[in-house]
Amino acid sequence: MKKISLFCLLFYAMEIMAQNQVNIIPQPQNIETRPGNFNITAKTKIKILSSQALKSASFFTGYLQNIYGLTIQTIADKAELKSHTTEQVIILGINKNLAATKEGYSLDITPNTINIEGIDEAGIFYAIQSLIQLIPVEKNDIGSFPVPCLKIDDAPRFAYRGMHLDVSRHFFPVSFIKKYIDFIAMHKMNRFHWHLTDDQGWRIEIKKYPKLTSVGGYRNGTTIGRYPGTGNTGTAYGGFYTQDEIKDIVKYASDRYVEVIPEIELPGHASAAIGAYPELSCFPEESTKHPEKVVWAGSSTGKQVQQTWGVFEDVFAPTETTFAFLENVFDEVLPLFPSKYIHIGGDECPKESWKRSAFCQQLIKEKNLKDEHELQSYFITRIEKYINSKGKQIIGWDEILEGGLAPNALVMSWRGEKGGIEAAKQKHQVIMTPGEWMYFDHKQKQKEDSVTIGGYTTVQKVYSYEPLPKQLNADDVKYVLGAQANVWTEYMTNTSKVEYMIFPRMSALSEVLWTSKEQRNWNHFEPRLLHAFKRYSFLGWNYSKAYFEEPIK
Image 1 (tube, rainbow, N blue to C red):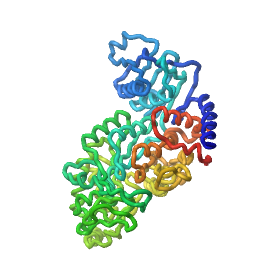
Image 2 (image 1 turned 90 degrees about the vertical axis):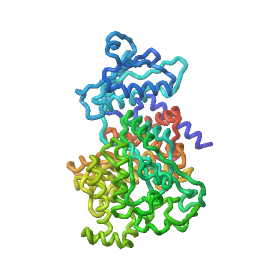
Image 3 (image 1 turned 180 degrees about the vertical axis):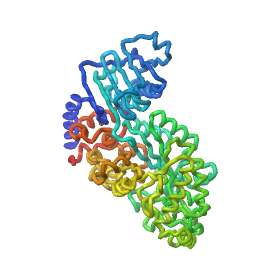
Image 4 (image 1 turned 135 degrees about the horizontal axis):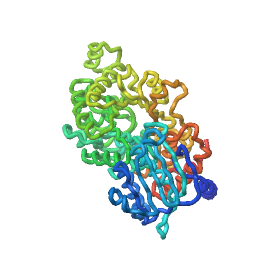
């Protein structure tokens, strides 16, 4: 009872503070407030000055209809634009002369007009996201929604602003993937890293290899509770996305200026693929090993999809059979995703099977490799050459540095910042995603009310993160494209839990990636965060309330 009272008092006090400022997250570069309001009503019209604004207008009108039940008209026809006059108008257009970088915008609100100019299409869209955050987070019977008069000039700090989602450990429906993309877009983030394959499930249809989904897409059971668990569900679990569903999701994301980057794990985390096609293993005749401590469901003979979490010995064999398989897989995957990037994993690849394999040891000698680490580099480099030949660039976890970095690889640094620093100094592009700050599977309060993988990462800690390490000089930092939060789903069995784990930390991350380092200030962010809680509730998003229960750190 005492906790509830303190929660209410704090919420009330902070809400008063929030009312006295513009509650936009992430914080825009420049805001000039003015007296008065623009009232959005059914009489408001949207004027489209450029076809490049159509997707943003569609998003905005759809949002007003779905959230507020308000329908407003869009005018895009040139003849109608000339003849039509209205006092209440929202104007959308491109202005390449804006003093802004890519994705920048201007939002100018007066009592009769909202004028939005983007330096490009994405800029218009992000102006719409700022406008949406100015609309009251409550419905009313009169159908009039005031937004304050102001002028905003804004642009992002980093080009890469990402969120990751693992759908291999737990599978989520298309409807939630689209909702997750909306979360990304509405926070002015622009990359969705989609982790589609792992030991526990293969989630993307490959027509040449149907068993990848019919066999590799399903496991016979799942560990109950935190590893090693208290038992096994004993229930078949799985699912996958058809290529048509993926095309639909990619278009949905593109309409929201979110680039989808798929991940196909190799050479480790390959149990699901090997379960479907045992010939991809160094030892096809050996049954899948699983930890002795965990309860196993169903047959344990032959190759199996893993039912628990961790790192497993069975990895792809570096044979011509495997390379032909992977090239065929990429031949189907790459056309589905317009992104110039494909993530190939490269992390946590045990070397035991390669050490035991006579073929691998002979290959090491033939290629004049020093050891199994260089064999991994050979594996990654060979895949990279094929992907580069298709006009794409690989991203890999920082383990791809081991044994020598593939020539054109982009490094995603997760084991702290060391890998990112090393890669940047080698003049390779880097995305920072260190576990201490950027792993949203970590708990948000000391005593979490549901199972998590561990760790402890508060919203305050996320907000404190600086993506440009001090160890990098002025020339090196240009290789850091931005940062990303990772959402690994061992202990996220449903969509509500995913929302709970990302909010409010995603809001903090959005400001880290958009707003300049000089402008970021927790004391200024905190009241806007409180307003964000209100907005989450209004939109029906689940979120953690740990902020109200843990001391600020």
